[in-house]
Image 1 (cartoon, rainbow, N blue to C red):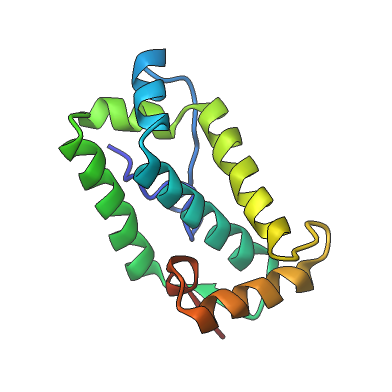
Image 2 (tube, rainbow, N blue to C red):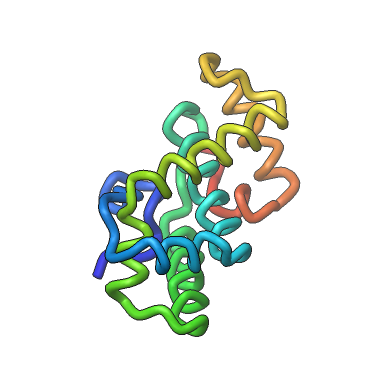
Length: 138
């Protein structure tokens, strides 16, 4: 099973969201706020580290955070196949990316301006937010 660390902070662990095993599973996990907020955090951190050369990922923290999301999904009654189907669903990926972009723009990021990602990333790191905890200044 691919880890829930999709939309990862590294190319090896990316959210490849493709057709899932059922709309009911996707809907159920989609409505799980903590998991969705976590996936959005990972997506935001991933976007920042990809656009800003002066910020790099904290891979172990990101992996641990993703595994905690996976554990929450399992505790909510979802099995490995259902979790994988959800994180591989293309529409779910688009939804999470849209939420991540909305957050970034609310923080002053201009999506076409890489330096604005750096400023947002440095601010997240300084605030020690969950996003910032997944990143480090180089």
